[in-house]
Picture 1 (cartoon, one colour):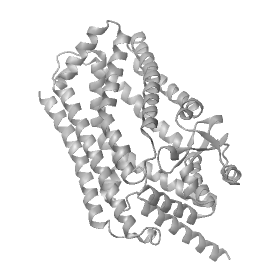
Picture 2 (cartoon, helix red, strand yellow; picture 1 turned 90 degrees about the vertical axis):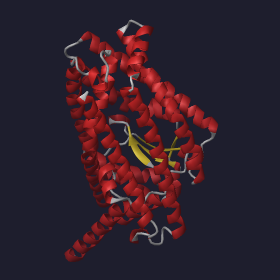
Picture 3 (cartoon, one colour; picture 1 turned 135 degrees about the vertical axis):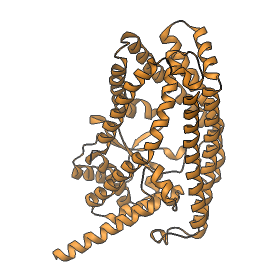
Picture 4 (tube, helix red, strand yellow; picture 1 turned 120 degrees about the vertical axis):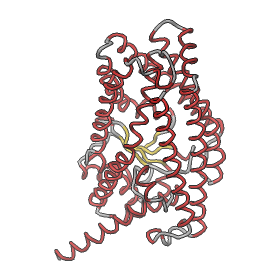
Length: 424
């Protein structure tokens, strides 16, 4: 009982910290949100600034409501005895270890999807619609939902079935074989996603803007990167938000531009955004993140192996006995308690990489001003919060606050000009 109380109190404490940080962030925005940062003067007027603040506040409140519902359901499910009932119901459906495991996981996934549906509908057709972002029809939203469910059930089912097979075949070493399998499966998905999965949702076309693809290829060549294809996608069918990204790995690595980004930015700004993405590859940020993630996964699975075998594990949530799958769920819950305090560390590492990619983009393009102006446009068009609370940003932000990024780029530009003047 004492351990159960400690675990429950820890979870409530971490939830409380998260909500307190959200409160700090919104309070900070209400206090400072009426002032236009120097870096955005001329690009954002007071009316647009009020719109940004309102959008940020509504988005945060919607996220808070979803979080409260999800956390309440999880606590009732784990500590209210529902997990035990669910576990026994699954056991009554099949005596097969693999079949029971599949049913256990997939039914939970469908239940979670059903819980998320009202929030997804509100997000797309009320919140995003109100602020002029949503362009998705109900039919397209339903089509995407069905496709996502089908892909998740098929791929997720295959991964779970293979994982349970490894557990059954190697009771003492399954943690290692599962880690190796999930690593291989992740790499495989990086290969097939650009050609088999992403086209199910977007229409990929060659870049239509005259001379842009040539400019991109020349930029990537200077960066020492080989890109198989450069595409634009019809993201405007779903939203007016803009983005660009690298996808794939090895020979299937490609660049994808949202058509909204092409419409909103100049050629130099687009090249600066892609130079930033190239910086992540050249500075091996992607590889470092994979290594870090897989290291934690390796250690986590080793610990999970021992916890799952521990006879006292079900008692941590008030159960007398539990199946392998229920025990795995308890371990995942405990894992969330361990990783929450590490959130600021992971956020810091991510922000450091973003700063490094910004510097790389400025050096590669030779145009820090274009990178800075692209960030101004991205923030303006996406109604990004320009006044996050420093503590909230330090804890949760994977990217540095945009004002900080622009200030750093302009400082780099001034430094470069000073060095050129000295050399001259």
